[in-house]
Length: 401
Length: 165
Image (cartoon, rainbow over all chains, first blue to last red; front, top):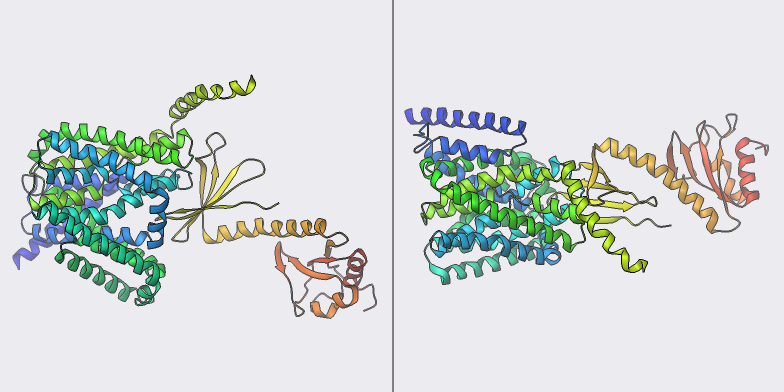
């Protein structure tokens, strides 16, 4: 009985502290993710306050947190939206992958890591945080902007790409080698395509199976279905996260809408536990040596994200200020990078990976939203206007002659 | 003139509708999936950015749509007048002493007697489109009728009770 009471005290104090941190962060317009990570660093192994009884509980909570993060992401998109986006924004998505994943992989080789770790770091630098970016766009009142659909479609493609990337990484980290990884990738491709086709054709039939009238039954059935499918997916070595993501995509209409509302508080709780868990599994003493490399990597990949945004926005005819806004908005990395790093930590592939990923996400997720605000300041606007003004008179000259 | 409204999907958020006005400004509406609507106004200097984004509640959006929609309906009726030569549209106020206050539209038998049709009734800044024969008139109603000059004059006379009905 004694360990249960200690568990209650530890978890209670932890959650309360996180709530306070989140509140402070909101005051400064800061995403709670970096604060949760820092809290995780402060607690546990080698931290200020050791947690004894609740580590196991937090570990299970973290696993559920990843699953809930992914199912909510899937619920946000409908299958037809994903397919439609893939057609229109594929070039931007490919460029995004090349510009941002390759520097991560190259950096890993530079540090002398193996190719498994390089694959992981490529994913960490590739994927922007759709949660943080959507929040920043809403806070800055930019949802109506012309470059916003471009930003969103890049995020959608990244999220969809994760459905293929995560199984590949999971298999590779399980030590099956590249051939085994490709086999897992093939299984994932087949599964995702099958789910998309079924969701587009029979989405209403699946959703009508679940009633929206009773919120309690809805919560239990959607949560149960998600955990079940995630477990089966993990058993088939396709990664639990991807299973959850596919459940989210397959649900549509009113079921998806109500499930989003009902699952949001649960997601907030377990996602916080997940970020804390990742911080917990990082030993604070390992942080200082990787700070400089993390800073370098962050600077490099934030620059490549800006280039991605500029290119993607230019493709659809957005002017220079909008291109810059799109680029700056895409910079923050967040939950997905941590999910990917979490997979690597669990398999113990490279001991320095977890502290590097933590530092990297901390840097990008804090500075990204602040830099995104930069394009709203007057000096920035006049700077860009000057650049366009210098260019403009060049064009009418031949017409005047 | 037809207005071109462009629709852009916002994956994960909802959909955006926008249009460029004759005066060169761009206005739009961002409809969130959860029912929230933002009215957005675009910057003149930077047409890709919104200058203001105004969140509207359901009631506010409905009220605004009513105000804008009412004038749109009258605008369309006015357009009809130019299209069909000889056919006129007129707004006829129901006189305070009209015998039809409190009676039904069918009782006026305007279409049979004049050939003109009552296509809408304006009441309290609201438009009641295509009222049926059982529609009941109230004081201060304004009738929108379409017909020839003589037909419309006939309607005016009937509603005023000048035909000895």
